[in-house]
Image (cartoon, rainbow, N blue to C red):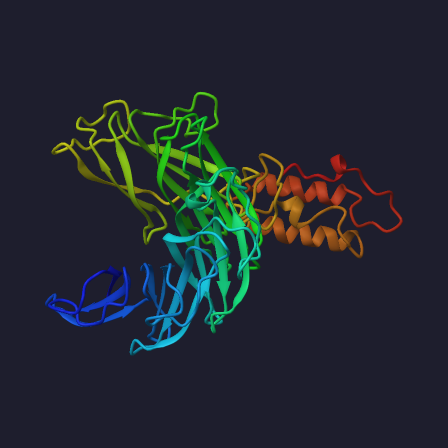
Length: 445
């Protein structure tokens, strides 16, 4: 399938009618490149499609924008100057439902995304909006425009959750205090949405803010991460990649020099670099890195490899390998495609016990303690202050756990005896005994 817009009358290479200025157009292409079937949708004004997705029932969901009223194939009216336009088709191309989304101003689906088909058969749509609450938009305008031209710049990123029948479940606005332009929108494992966007940087002073935000499954903004460039050309071509732990990896092209920490990774090689940022489920930065040389690198895509690593594709005009950067392959011409494979990341280990946080069942283990595969030390598995019935039960449990650690090679035979004798002499678990202090009850292992 190919989607877009058309101004053509029926003829060679297009069979369906022309309804107005631009129509939303879908073409089905056969294995040999021939046109097998096509569909036109729209009214007397300008209508376009920008994104499409196959649905689980074999149909299709399309998002675009429309300036048309209720004419042609359009069965709904606009609320303002231009609305986001959503069309739901069945497996044969018939219209199941059609929806206009917007307020009294301009809504833009250029760069708009069908971020996800939800488990209940609904959808999440992302675009841009310059409308105050009106029409079927209820979320606020975050960038109140102060001149007549600014509404044309689609001030906020606007996200809409639809149910299976096309009715609005919730809608929310995110962004900065300047007009913002959507770059990418991707679903997260929990049913939320990751968004990358930046403001247009055309006003004075010409600052440019790149931001990444997470919208929760209920439509509330979970967090937003921002980086500001001192000029209007610091960031571009950004995308997001959701991670299984609820966090994300962001990738973008950046020419912003990190002089004051407000933008860029700690490393800047020159020209334009690729900057990768890893955050946890709360939007806190875990690590970042820069790819590039002294030339211009422009991001194409970021994907997850089967082994858990990352594949970054970009164009690069850094011709000489090793020139002020980490590009190791020499270029072939004025600009080449450069693909980098990154190894799987090491999971965070907050207490430094050698067991990743996502596998650690005993966090905050004291430094230097011997731990088992679940990240638990002997003292954490057999705490002196535990709910022991008596001293004998505590000693018996200590002997069993020590034997496990000894068998696994985590402690020596000598250490095993020392820990056991320390447990026997301790007051841990003794009824009516004065509770031993933490220092007296610790085995030091």
